[in-house]
Amino acid sequence: MKELRMRGNRALAAVLVGLWSVGAIGSLSGQGQAAEFRAGAAAVDITPTQLPVLINGGMLSRSANEIHSRIFARAIVLDDGRNQLAIVVVDSCMMPRALLDEAKQKAAETTGIPATNMLISATHAHSVPSSCGALGTDADPHYPEFLKRRLATAIQKAAQNLQPARVGLAAGWAPEYTALRRWIRRPDKMLVDPFGNLTVRANMHPGYQSPDAIGPSGPEAPELPVLAFQTRDGRPIAVLANFSMHYYGAPAI
Image (tube, rainbow, N blue to C red; front, side, top):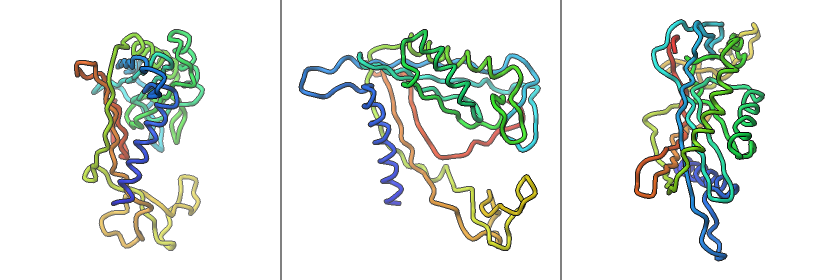
């Protein structure tokens, strides 16, 4: 547990170093006061407008014909008066590099934030539109172009919402909400992969006290680093957190 807590602290330190390296937290040198720190956030709806839509994350191709809940791209823009950066978290299983590069470039042209200062990640949801081919599903023919525009819009809106802010950080510990799902199987109990070859030595969910599994493939990661941004008078702007847990979703969006 001590080692895991140390990893959690290192992860949090890495976030700080990353922000500091582009000037998002401002200078603490004796040359004078740091420039005013600002933060802005926006949530842009990325729910598909054309149904049915291909859904990513399965071994076989599937599509959704109905929407149970809206999905979003949530963006934070940080500015210390010298540099700006943008962080976007997207309700997506995965996204292709080319799409992200084009979205960043479009946002850079309208905000002035360098594309190299933008980070876009996916929540890895399995019940959202397919923006790239993966496993048994192709990219949806309509959704990727729509998503690209909406990602750029999310960054633009967050930049427009910049305001004087303060930042806080903490590291939580939540082992009751996560578990290691991939276990090592016995050499004589290997499984066949999707291509018909006997290669699967590590596999998900072996079953309770399964005699076919030797043990977990690695340690759990229950640390929960959190960055919180507020206005100067304490009103919430955004919270950014990272937690090691695989998404579970339904067939429909």
